[in-house]
Length: 341
Length: 253
Image (tube, rainbow over all chains, first blue to last red; front, side):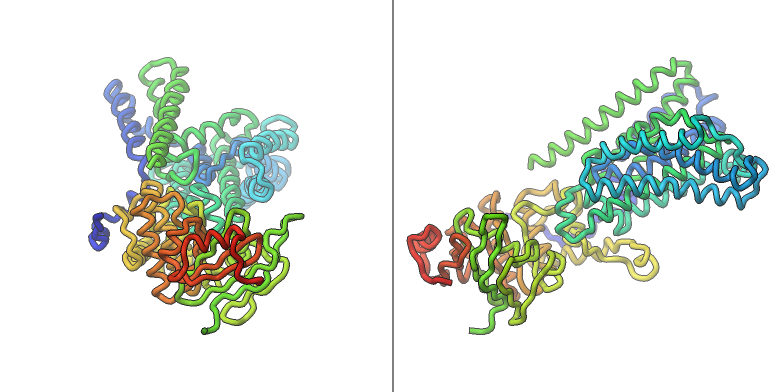
């Protein structure tokens, strides 16, 4: 029997960067770089431009905010199908609240009204997240069923409030500021999403909250026996996903200058795909927000690239599906190989 | 003999109509390994659950250092210095050994970062390595998820986690089940080291030769009651089996 000298082990310590990235993330970064390189080589004039970069980033920022919350949920071995509907609901309540505050049409309203609108959006998201979390943590119902319920209910509630139509009257200052404004050339939407992703990555990777999130996803019973308040933590994770969906709703409101009822039916699936592509395991316990950032960009780059190169854009979902299935297959074989020991 | 560290008297526990404990008593002293043996259904697991705060007995008293205690949960038992190693591996396979050792008791950085909940990874890792070395747990790599370790190494970490935090008593429910020979020996070594540090170790096991190899005393449960107590040094496997099956009865308490 050999006794490894543990005194030398500190030399092989994992760096914070490695922890942030996680094991599965490297290869997905390679896939993303290869995609960009291929499209870049085919059409260097159109692909590698600031404009292409900017539009790709803007179009992805709302989905990224949803996906950061989804990462936490999936790391606990849960799922949240309701994020797209909560986004719609929060956009509707926010737009209606701003209109109500400004005599029925908030187009000319100022920042005070916008701030209240943001608050309403976040609270709307928080309410649905809290409902999801309480049902999942206290009743033991599967997250798939609970959030399938709120997926339908939140959209229905949004449609009831708005009589099934889009809500217009978004303040100009919001559209010009958050929606299409830039800061040193960087779109404000992208900045918002980047800040959310950075905070999300730090909290998941370096804090007690993040550690408990991993522990619950890895072995819920072990976490409970270790004295981690599992139910309370799960409520907080779904609450976080809800609040971020509310923020995403507010961002979409600013960008499109209307609270749209339609067009978010598959946001939940897109967010789940991004998280899983980024190396987060559907079985819970492993994953990273940095991976999710990469995962969000793979479908976006494919779509953009196909358009620019002139490939029929309907190939994009097929290409994403192939990468997605490969990613889950890879994760599953890795786990099997590990558990055989 | 000195005052027992743990003295449970006349514990009764019903599950519906099933009487799992019928006035079971149990004693453990500091600095000894006491094995708790009995056939399936004798009430070993229920007794340990009552003593470690997982279940509450319907009646009976538990004295810790002579004063009555009633641990209402594993967390409150832990506050009394009592830890439990569970039969099924209660570790998070995706986390590394240090993270598992500190699970639920993570160290935080000092100052503002600590108040924000930022983990002291370096401190936890350093203390985990020291703890593993003290307990003679050798791991090939302390930076891999625990799921990538062998079963014995994983169980060693689970055992280490309990004994690092325990100050008085550790319950070990079948800690060597499903382990190979070398790994089993290593876990038994850890048990002896813990005893030598002055803690009480309660070992629940079906493996009689193992019980006699590591335990100082043996208490036998049968049908929810303690039926015999042996000094391990002067006992044989036949005597233990006799007491477990009812062929031999020593006491009525």
